[in-house]
Each structure stands twice: as C-alpha cells, then as structure tokens.
Amino acid sequence: MHPALFYRPGERLSLPELGAARLDGDVFEVGEGFMPADTVEEADARATSLRDLVPVHLAACGPTAAWIHGAGDAPPQIHHVRRGGPTRGRVGFSPRVVYHERRAAPEELLSIGGIAVTTPLATAEELLFAATRPDGDDESWLRALLLLSPELVDALRSTLAATARRPGRRRAVQLMSELATVRTS
Image (tube, rainbow, N blue to C red; front, side):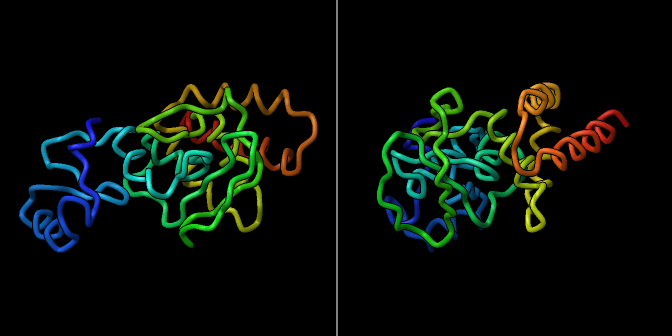
C-alpha cells in the first residue's frame, strides 16, 4: 500500500478534518488512521496503521497479528508485541500495548506494511496457548483466524503433536478437538 493512501491524524490532516471526511464518506477508519473510501483494506493497510505502535525491533503478535492477517473487523483494544530481534530494546510506549518478552524466531516473522508480524501459524499457536489460561480471552481471535485460514487447523495439530511439554498443552489439545468439531459441523 502506498503511504499516500493512509492518513494519520495530525500529519496531513487534523483529527477533526479526518472525522469530518469520515462523516462525509470520503475516508474510513483502519486501526490508528484512515484510508480513502474507495481503497481496499488489506493486511498491509492494517499493519501500516500500527507503524507508530510497533517499533522496528518489535513484532506484532497475538490478537494484533491475527487482526493484521484479516481476523476480526476491528483491531483489538490492547495491542500485543514481542521481541523480533536478538537484543532487548527500551520498552516504554503506549499503555495500549502489551510487551511479551519471548523472542519470535526469524522463521516466525513476516514483514507486512513496514512492520514485523508473526506468521499465521505462529499467531494461531500463540492464541491457542493464551486461550488455555483462565484469564485468556484470545479464543475468539483464534476462532476468527481459523475461519479465515482453515488449513491452519491441521498445521496447528502437527505443531501441537510435536510439542512434548509445555504449560497448557493438555488444555490446548482439548481446545483443538473442540475447534475441529465446530469446523466440521
């Protein structure tokens, strides 16, 4: 996506001007910015909208990566990022961003819209194990991602079978069987 097709509040137009253009039907909201009404919202547009929230040394993950890949209509309220490189950078940015310390392996990363994003399989695996926690609300993002890419179910099962020991694995296997039965019905 060409950067000229993305409007961030305060750059070329102020937030009130963009709000008025939105009311007129000239632009629509995408994440942290706006796009012209006659453009298509794709993964690169969603990623571009988060460029200010995901610094160079970090990668979008979890629900944020699922949204970038096309799951869900609206971005998550809280964005998730993790280390994308070998070094730890300074983390002191928006309270709307949760930082995960575990580093994403290079094969788990894609570059979309100028930011690093975990692959759909790595995202699905992360969402699956996050959904096993009692406070985890990531199951809806996982369901949306699996509906968008049904081939991920078999790949996720293979990854789970290769995982011998990991906290939440038993619940993850149970959740995968539930998701598979929902998919086939």
